[in-house]
Image (cartoon, rainbow, N blue to C red; front, top):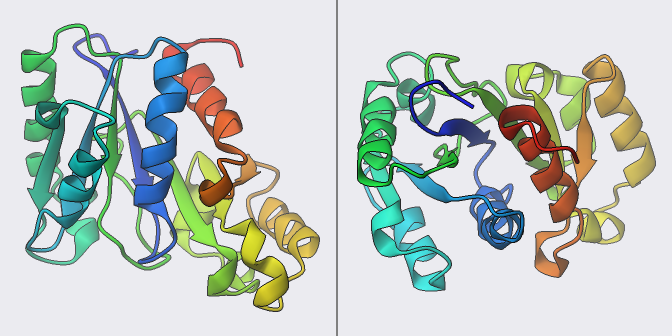
Length: 206
């Protein structure tokens, strides 16, 4: 855990890959593990993702902050993460017992990465509907993230994707670094992601 304040975990990935759905599933999974958490969402010029999360009533509304990037989404998570750092600092001040802050990036392409000045750990979400060639494209988000999440695995038979080769290619591209699969609609694979986060930044055994 950070010496000053909660651990910070970034969640990035292309538009439509299921980042917000993953956050919605992770919140109760982390609560079951006794984790005190808050969320920061990033959108271009709206608070759409934050409002969606607030409507779920999974967290108190004041524990969900929105950052408007106003430009390329990765700008405020990589080049100049000041707005997100200030939002995270404000959550630490408001909730001194926080263990974890999830920082969801606005949707971007495979080049999106997080500054390590902002986060302690970050994961990248892709989905099978985007095509089984995504791992072969070896974008920085796929290669450099601490954890790669392949989401919407339930759609594989309907979009012409054979899941096992896609997983193998992702593992090869990442040189064996962690790859997990999820189906957020059915809550499948969520516990494995929650365990990975806890083990990495909260030092809880999976």
